[in-house]
Length: 422
Image 1 (tube, rainbow, N blue to C red):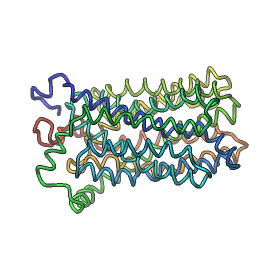
Image 2 (cartoon, rainbow, N blue to C red):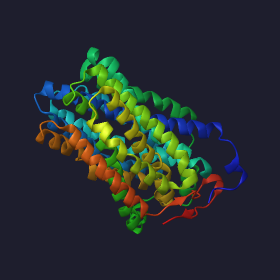
Image 3 (cartoon, helix red, strand yellow):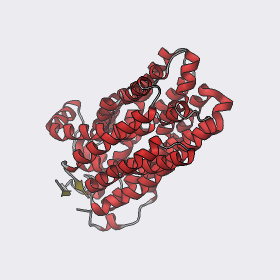
């Protein structure tokens, strides 16, 4: 049930537009800092005298630490506001990304990337709740797609930086580029207003640790369902993205320029998928959009993993990421609509990042499968993608949906249950 009052039907005001822009850029630059690592693992392994599997533990630790950040920063955002916490996490992940370039050993790098992961884990839930609580229900699908397109946008920027700069500045210089997101703090301080839902929550006197834990425990069945859902989602994205540059370098022996160009094409497909499927979910529902996009990945897998030429590999990468990020485009709206109001800054990010934790061994697992089969990364990538697409579609299909749910605090409205589809 969409909001029907005149405020809901009015055009977005300047503050709402700035909030959308800031949250989109926050997720874009967060992803940019994360994906810098996937392009330079081969170089790091060479410099530290280790193999790819050992370096890929940095991916694992980054993902594994994200639930900690989601829980801590999410609770702080529910207690003290979305806006100041968003500024804090952007500052932290920017500084920690740059610190990665100063690591003198693989052990130091692993510690820094774990701390980076905690900061990264706080950004998505806080930014998504801030936006979804600020905009009308009728716009959630399209804005959800825009927000989630920030992830492949960041990957695209990282691939461009690798293509244009790696041969000149090396892997340490690449990480120093991670300071750039700190510039976003000025935009947030000047143009972003606090969520109206948070203001209503504070006025009601909520937000203690005990109340947060009781609210979380009271929704354990929903939390369990969403953790499994987000585990599948994270296998779907990280299983098709993180080791693809390594696959191109190790199995096809492509140089820096060609690898960068193919990954840029891949992320253009991801952005297109997010911008198409997000608005589509407003028309056909969140679950149907996710199921449709997930299953569309299956016919693209052979082209993406087993093609022999750069042109066909690029086409396959474009198509599979249209499907992957098309499904992901629905996630910000879907999780916020399903989440309990008093813990909305914490709950979506926490279940998302717990799913990330469960899927966090994906990088080392895929690297191990590939190295165990004579560096056959196509086998590792294709197998994970195919299984995950089917599991994600089936699990999503049996779950709940609350499209158009009124989020407490929007123009003074109370929460409602929306349209519930089983």
